[in-house]
Every structure is written in C-alpha cells, then in structure tokens.
Length: 322
Ligand SMILES: Nc1ncnc2c1ncn2[C@@H]1O[C@H](COP(=O)(O)OP(=O)(O)OP(=O)(O)O)[C@@H](O)[C@H]1O
Image 1 (cartoon, rainbow, N blue to C red):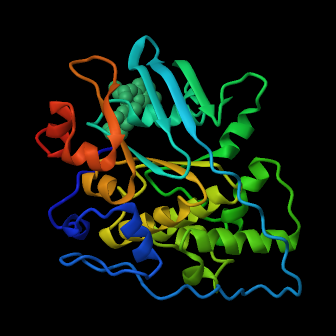
Image 2 (cartoon, helix red, strand yellow):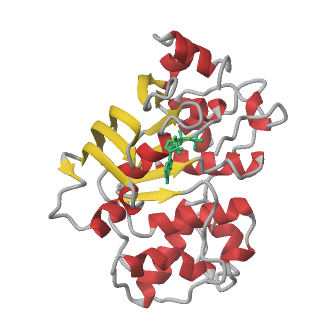
C-alpha cells in the first residue's frame, strides 16, 4: 500500500504553507508563494446553481460540532501476531493529523481501530480506548452504526457503487445508518455534500449517471461526499490520493483543507510533501525488527519536518529510509 512521491509529481515542487497561508489562498485572499505551481483557483465561490426544481429550500442541516479523537494505549493483534503496542495519540478537533511511517508499521490498522473496522476481521483483537469528545467509541452500550456514522472513512481505492447513480451514491450511507429524509432533503444533501467535496460543478448535470463512469479522482470525491452525507464528526482517510494523478491529488488536498473547518481529519499518507501541505499535526509510526508498531514521535508538522527530536524521524522524513 505504499505510494512514495515520485520526482515527476508536480506536487513535490510546492513549498509547505502555513495553515493561515493555505486558508488565505483557498479564499483567494493571497497568492501562492514564488516558485510554487499555482493550482488553487482564486475566484470567489458563487453559490452553486441547483439543478433541482424546488420552491422551498429545506432548513440547512446543522454541522455536527467539531470533535476531538483520543486514542489511549492502543495495542492490536491479528491472531497472536501483535502489530501495535500501546499507541496513544490525541487528534485535535478541526485539524488534519497525518499518520506517517514505513510500510507495515500499523498505520492502517490504527486507523481502522478508530472507527471499529478492525473488529470486522475474524482473527483481530485489540486493547486500549478510543474516545470521541470523551465518549468511548467501544462502549458496549453504543451501537456500531453510531460509531461509523460519527467517524467516517475514505479508502485508498475509490469505492463508489459503480452501477448506482451519482445521486444515490451520495445518499447510500443514509440507508445504511437508517436515516430518513424526504425528497427535498435528499436533493439538498446531494447538492451540499457534492459541493463540499468539490464535485458539484462537474456532475450537477448528470446526477443520474452511474458513479462508476467518473474518473478516479472524481470517484474519490464522490466517496468523500458519501461520507459527508451522514454528517460525521471525524473523517479518516487511508492514503486517499495514492491511486490518483497529481492534479486529482491536489483537488482532494484542497477539499480536505476546506472540510477541516467542519470535520476533524486523520490521514494516512506516504507522501511527505502531502503531509506537510495539509496537516497541522503528524505522528511517526515505526515497527522495528519484527516488533509491533509504535509512535516514535508526534507533534506539529512543522516541528516534525524541521526539528524532529528523534534521529529516526529525521531520517524518515528526509527519505533516508522508508
Ligand atoms: N487482515 C490482516 N490479517 C493479518 N495481518 C494483517 C492484516 N492486516 C494487516 N496485517 C498485518 O499488520 C501489520 C500492520 O499492517 P498495516 O496495514 O496496518 O500497516 P501500514 O503501516 O498501514 O502499512 P502500509 O503503509 O503498507 O499500508 C503488518 O504486519 C500486516 O501484515
């Protein structure tokens, strides 16, 4: 599942931007720094024109409050093979946290534990706690579907339902979570979620076309829209751009930087430039010599890339090993 950045990846020529710079550029209030490839559109965003014929707009769905995710002492096993050892990490509300580290150190396993997908694997077990705003995600009294609803996930390979329409793909999560909505509400959700995922303008005239007919990058944004339809408080993204070209990657990154105002994001990435561009905080995972994975170091992305405390972090972020 590795996806190292390549020399011809246009994104590699971009210098890291501070979050304030990123936001200002996204809003068109600043320009890209010298030497950067300006791919962020600057014009003001006009309100999307709806293709739906409706006289009365439904009340906007209130955004779920931003949530902090807190993993405490997470250990994980597949059978008797331990793959994580007492990993603790706080993922603050409203920021993007990147999980970085070499292949096989347990990043994806950690991510799947955060929204209870690990337990779907028959041989899998775990120890520790995951709290969303202090509430235990693994509380036996809590329904599994509630955990998945509040902590959504986007996978490495875009996985829309290929024969299902774009419209129905966005709403697929509603059925799974037993959420009811009338026609106006559905229309509104489809438009809002596709807009947030940066896809509305490209698909608004073909909402009844199958999701499988979109490009890879569009499919990934459709999957993001599908995740957003159930108003998650946290969005987990497991190498969401590794199957995409640089342009689509950039669009997804822009989407993430917009979304983080509404939802806490945790991303697994092998692309160090991507981690620098999008995340505020980074955690470096490592599994040395057959040992289970653990966090060597975590902190602000800037500090992790410019002045890491641990030599292994320095070596990894500088490409000395991977
Ligand atoms: N379904 C599974 N059954 C058994 N072992 C598994 C399973 N999934 C992962 N593992 C093992 O768990 C360890 C951690 O894998 P994981 O995919 O979490 O690492 P990763 O850091 O995300 O790797 P990559 O960056 O390559 O995706 C590896 O040794 C892997 O072989």
